[in-house]
Length: 238
Image (cartoon, rainbow, N blue to C red; front, side, top):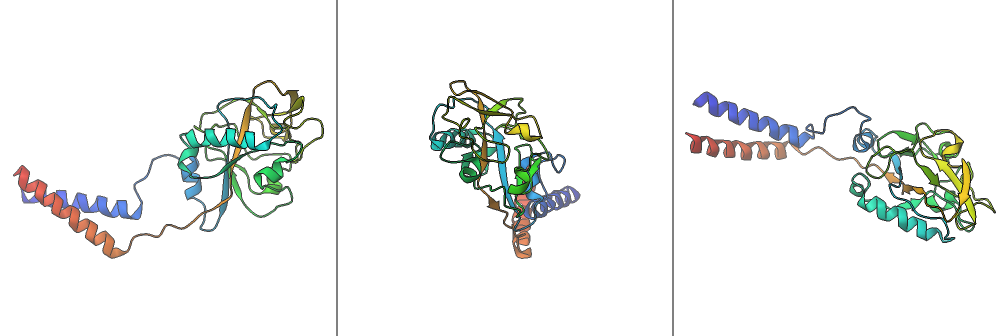
């Protein structure tokens, strides 16, 4: 009986220490999920998240806020994106606002900002990198982390600017390929604005904050508390 009790206490205390240090986590490879990818960043690193909308809409409006609202609402309902607590905008251009301005991602910005898709893969590492014509990985995943092969409405040239004839709100506007890594991810073809397509949504830039480990006293108190619980359970079973 004594051995059984000691085993119960030691097991419980071990769990307390593991929980306090944050060792218990969802299994998987380091790049398998967005949360793990963000966790692997260093304190002070900046990041964004980009996704393909799982639903579609037309591009007849010339008001960029209509598209920002569209991607934001989907992000707030996504199983991945809704957990991040971020603000979202459309990676798209109208005649009044181009994609660089709307998202705050300039093609002249070389400062490091890791841009992830919702599968945790790095798309680009700066604004300059995003708009240079090639992505490190396709965006292709939606707000729920489902892989898509969608054609996406962008109204945007390959360097993130608008074009006087093919922005959102025009009779025809540019589209891109969500599953591609070269410049056609943003500027593949054009189509009638009345036709429905998915859109890209991108988050604000966030700085990773460090999460401090609990003080030793906290671990000890938690361990003692759980040990007491173990003793109570042991007496009940005896």
